[in-house]
Length: 482
Image 1 (tube, rainbow, N blue to C red):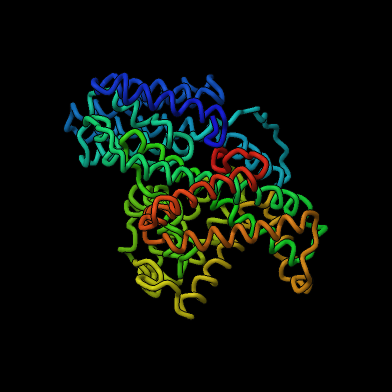
Image 2 (image 1 turned 30 degrees about the vertical axis):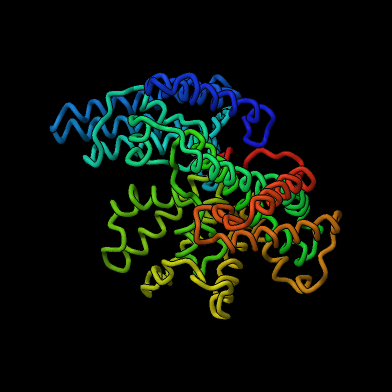
């Protein structure tokens, strides 16, 4: 079920009414409603994968109980690795089986030995990378004794399956989310209104910006050999805003929807395209995933505590794994490696924590130095996105080679140029509004808060109008494939 669909527009009010007006006096019943609603929401794509989803829930719930019953280190490790093995086994099979098989066969062919490998027609379950990581984090935290194991299966099921963030995050921790399902919730009008504003802004980013960018991106990347360097650069620029507006738009809708139910989810994007270096970018982009890898992979490997070579190794490990998490393609690994190269100089020079505060704090405009830093960081990010979007490594290299050719200095030429100019204006509007709201949880959090009601509602209706008037062809959210 897509957030930007009629199905969801009908589904959400029904669940909201049942939640606050029918089940509100019984916490277990309220949580059970959320579990049922979440399974309906997920099963809307393919009900067959509900069994896989339920398996992950049962495995980690049982692992938590097992860890709570023993202090024996060997048994605790056995329980932990068994739970992680089942979760990662499901993830590897559905997402990476054919990738490993194809590369295994290719490796033997390279040395002159032909072997046969049978690829499987595997359907990738929607959001499997998200809910397996969320479920696994619970078991790891219980193992580390950072969290008490819960005996409330319904509350735990609600934590794993909570429909707003089920298929594309944020990837929540049990330390933040699980406790909210074991405590009674009361309706907060202010929180709900703030949630609706965030949903509205998320829909604008998804429908107006991301979906319109998608058409140009698909055309330019699919026919890149026929276009000039300037056109390809514009295509990469549009993809940068497609993936940002698509994914952060989903997160805005998810977080806003959760607020309607009295649930607080973590911020997943903190205006990353206003970052002054790549370290700041990665503190602001897909925060729930980057902090997951930091806490469960980077720090256990030693983090930045060891010598220089250990630091370099750990940085490459975390970025390569992050790239591979996104998909079974060498392009994602190359994207991760490139970002590791971007990050390394900052870490080795101890500059990776220079920009912990928002840019131009207390000022409307950035300084010239800040502006140049933002522009440079954005340019590096756009070039890296080419690997993320390309079909294969060769395609990415050819694409970047054309950008670096003299044709970069020609005018972009492609079908729909007038519509692209309109889209550039809309992207400019997006940047202005987000710059104005960069110190808050989302761009509309305080925009117009001091305006008189007619002016404030005029803003909201203008955004609604833009969604209907400028909305592009409906597209599935990009991160559903991950």
